Length: 240
Image 1: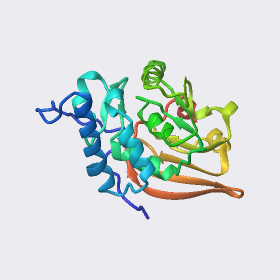
Image 2: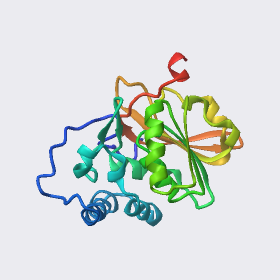
Image 3: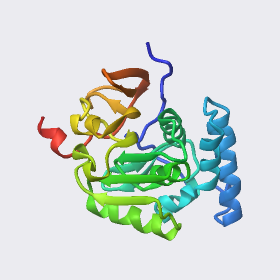
Image 4: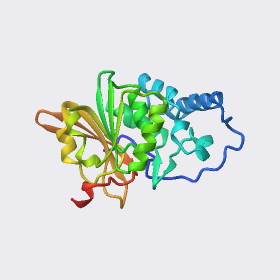
């Protein structure tokens, strides 16, 4: 049984109008919008981890969207970032982060860097974040933004996320921000026993299921969190 139904996702792009004077595009205006986002979209729902909430207050989401969309950066919806990809709805990023249960000593693998925003949120919580993006120009753009913000504990590469990053395994947690139809076995092998893997699983023809897998000595234990819509996972997974 699903615990919740997730309304938006990274695979759904909404048409967003201009700011209409609602937010000043200044650092102070962005700060106020960020605080409003956290209080209204996250804390008022079921985001209860104070470390996660603090990370969302800290990371400048507007830095990860195209300049033309910055007035909408803190809205309750995903936004296009080019190449048919999007930056996720803030709530979706928050719920997946909370489900991952990151500690300050964790080493995390992210599959699907996209804009780099999820990696930045994770970097506020973890010791190290390794993130893989299938589209090279998105990986390059995300790395530039992350470098400009001073993140030293995020490592970005362009590549096939299906294969993971074995030279830096095992990982305390793995988060997949695109939808495979089945769980990639190489990623399961790279997860520590006791680690958690958060992923939307399912075909593109209908809603996927946001799932948390916990690795035990005897295998994976699945916890189903609800329906969602994500862009498909690319790479070797497509040929299976």
